[in-house]
Image 1 (tube, rainbow, N blue to C red):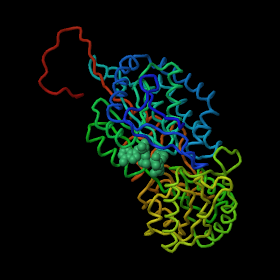
Image 2 (image 1 turned 180 degrees about the horizontal axis):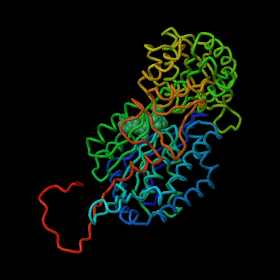
Image 3 (image 1 turned 90 degrees about the vertical axis):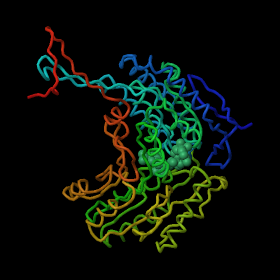
Image 4 (image 1 turned 90 degrees about the horizontal axis):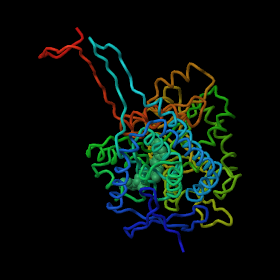
Length: 498
Ligand code: NAD
């Protein structure tokens, strides 16, 4: 019988009540390996009540004790790494070493959040006025929620809940219905680490559950990561319901290659960032921008045999470069984009559409695809494809290379490969994109810096993790105090520092 996954509420697994279920595939075999319950609004309300109940005690716990729970959680996740990575790989389709990386990048934010006693400290000004001192404190918001995508089922929930609960909030994660097992397991481990019941809950579901979270006045903030149209919807509706919202969307990241770049190195970096995880990363590099015809021709000639030689295999294999895509529907959508690109006049240098893996003919595989001569105006360049597809846009000069990513609808990440420090510096200053790599293909900032894209890649003002994360998950209170020894006279004029 197919396993049926429910929710994790108030410290325990609970079965779904709505009667609505969603298939969880094994992308390598194409089989349905489990089903997940899709919550009705009443089940969301149950989770919110549990989180609300847990909040006062958790928020009042001193930050060092909250940090100890996170230290323990980190230890438990490390011990469970192989189990988590296999679970993740067999639902998502990314290869096992990459699945370990997904868990590890999340753990790095947990490590950051372990510093919460220092991070949440307020500021203090002595003698701001006669006998007056001013100080500030950062207090948790209450019940908060994270709505997460399929493509990083370990890292992105950990980005959100480790900082949120370190700050004293209680949390509801609504993971992707495509791969919910890892978020459920992380909630179990958080309980085992000593978090009180209700501090971290997982509610599975789709739009119905998301809308119930948005509309519940007890939920004070929402962090969302997913595609841009949904991100915009969550931002608009969440803020309409008076919530604090950060909503991160899709991407189309460019890698600029200047004529002076070390081409061999640039290509090695590009191939990993374009095709790793079958291109299903918001910080993948689906667009290469060689500057000058000579650079472009050299790039294509070095790339072509490498794309043809990509090792595509079952997700649990240790020696493949990439595995299958997440669902058949998504793979077919990616293939439709390749057809569109060809119709738009792009040259199909390598066509991965016919690829099939022997022994796994029902798996959601496709081969790496390389398209040359893409340009602005092409729909397939404008949209996020989110598959193992690399498009080359040839730029005539440096100015055009800055303009391409700057004018694109998305502004998540961008990279420049060059040996020229001045050009790299000018590029980093001028480009209209949130995260920039210089000779680094996937510039995902480390946990103690902050992650966030611009334009249609990010709605809201505050980024994920790092000090910005602490600001997002807390509200600031400022106290102005005076302890007068004598009775004071009345003041009818606003006090100033004159
Ligand atoms: P998605 O937008 O389909 O789903 C994200 C979440 O929203 C899931 O939990 C899903 O259940 C929920 N959802 C889906 N449809 C909804 C609706 N109509 N109303 C309310 N909620 C809904 O995204 P996905 O396919 O899971 O993830 C891939 C996308 O996420 C890509 O666009 C990728 O670029 C993006 N992404 C962005 C970042 C970033 O930091 N900017 C990181 C990872 C992924």
